[in-house]
Image 1 (cartoon, rainbow, N blue to C red):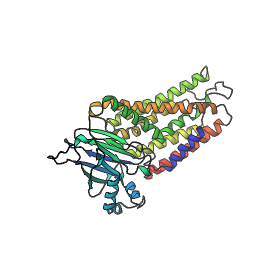
Image 2: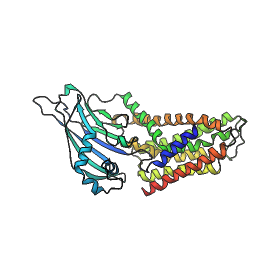
Image 3: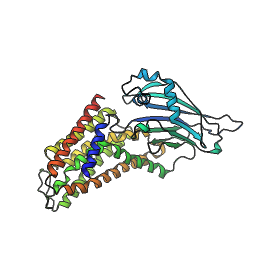
Image 4: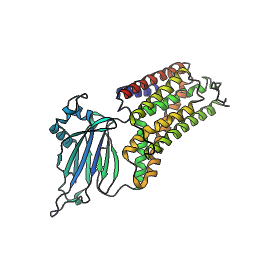
Length: 388
């Protein structure tokens, strides 16, 4: 089971591009909701503005131009872009689709990547009493199941929401979300961010691969090898102590930089951060492959590299934007979500690792061999992210 999960994770990692290995392709939708969203016989229907910012490569692929198409060739397809967006980004009230218009596309740069920005204008003639305004996004999702749309809503109902393949609609009218709903949303985002961040998952896995070496196949405790290790009276205590130190150190490390980056106290460019995250996986995997029983210093390594991973964790949180009135709640909920997903992952792999630890081929095949494969995949990410 563990081998199958590791193989699937590795295939996902090699098939993902450097920009998409961590978050998948991303678009941004900026929605300006007018103060009055109703329309009566004596009142003209208000217009609703949506600015869509989509990665140029995604637009090019949707138009059949190929991912290497130059930006100029993409921008020349104004009519095709308009038809594609109006067919995929829709606004409706009471089941009635509001007609829309599309402005001229233009290029912009975001985080060292090329994006196409397009303004959409919708006018709903349906009276407000006949239903809520509902925004739906069906663009890119059919071709990229990991795609995310970050939706920012302004105009008196400021909020930020992430749309994904299984949740592509957002209600734009009605009361703002309650405190518990806001906390739950950021908690869920934190869990998803860890679960979908293959590099974070692989880093933690590379730290955990050798836990089965704490016991002999007979169940007796192994003699400690590292100078800082103290022989535990039982394999269970040794195991629990090491897991506690590893998880705690990684948690403390990334929690510090996550908060600093999310609050914009320290903000680093994403490319060097992503390169450093991949390099941290290489470093831990190489160490485990060469000296799997020397685990005494791994908690310090986990804490140090956790500082780097925290900047990566903060990327989605910064893009979502911390709500002005609930900054602490959102930050804490997001971090708790990461920790819950992290603990769930540890619980998922711990049992199989301990069972495999009783076999004679655990160290040469699972620990050393698995670490070599992880190191190769992370090295591929380093090269791709440097070149990208």
